[in-house]
Length: 308
Length: 260
Image (tube, rainbow over all chains, first blue to last red; front, side, top):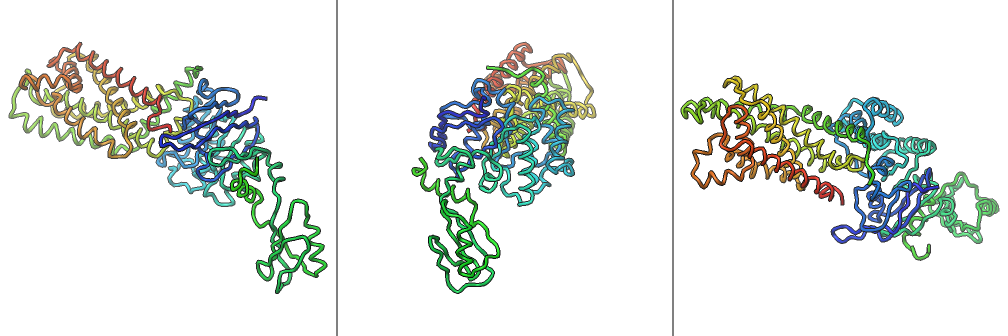
């Protein structure tokens, strides 16, 4: 099957000499929900910019559904919907007009553009605000308006550059559900995000980019299998005065009633519980110390040479 | 290179034009009212009060003589202002990216903004003409020439506004050209006097001023008198239009100030 995105040896050097991309190659399958992760300045937004044509590549080739963006610019753009990192609509325009106008840019007749606008504004919980100026929306609503605008022409590929930045947890989760629904409908989605929980929840495949170079490109499952050590926080039923000794495990008492246990990939929690039971220590509840992907992200970007 | 179907382009074009018209109508207090006040003051002070002491010029009262120039001034100022402010604002707040990521061809983007500017220019032209009727009778020597000149002049200055907006990096940059270039060109373009009154050197200098041709061709359409050959004036207008259109398209294609 033709990939949704095929990037080969993509280089981008900005006018000030900054090398944002140093020969990245990447394929994203049609129908995928793909995460592109990296620290600030790693090259994520530049990659999205090249795909959306807002950034001109220095060299390399980019194909969207098998069509070269240089020679088939109009056709590839018809297949793309772009949700930028920064809110970039006219704040004095009405919410409804912003989306209908975008439909017009993609050649949608007014009637169809209005129908689609209503459909997506309703799905994203913005219909009540459709007659208001965009400046009156909250931050989270503005970000969802960007999504509605990007979807009005029903693109085959949706590029989301940090779509839930600054959005509260409740809205973020409803946005996730909406995006998953869109993806189940067949739309390929490429997501950049700082919320690693978001990438882990939504995406099937992932690429990590660091200083303009792809340091990891694999499935989410394979990536998480690379996690050698996980940290768990155990809430104890009774307070302890000193750290218990669990043979084969690194433990630390973070608080008289909270025990941190480091678990290697070949160890399991049942064994930890059994050892604690033997010491007559009761566990009330348990949680991951940090997001698993976050641990990997930090380790990969700190030591990229170990990944290769 | 593949191309979009014509109906896509037409829809996109209409969308841009309607968005531009909606913008200047939404802020009508900023866009439509000030020119009406300015032109009324010109009619009262220059036409009525001072003009009554000047007497005749080229066979017409001074008020009749300056009306075409004042209408043309309003048209070109507003055509320029509409495009420069709208395009620069969209560039500044990055809403222009809505258009740049879409499949709309550059020439459609350019044509959409230009026609948006022409719409405001002509709207002001109509209002200015109606205002002039309170001070002077309506002459119409040749309506086709009048309409063609006003349309082409509006296009030329809309293109000028577009190019200014592309080069502008801050709001100051969109006021520099109107203040230091456009206004002197208008005042030295024969709006308030016949070029026959000037010494030979300044008469020659006037001939490199594009507004000189616009004002005189427009005056010919309304009054039937002109300081310049009308065919030559039209040739210059076509030349300015084509040159500016090609240059603006070149800048868009290069992504000057728009794509990194």
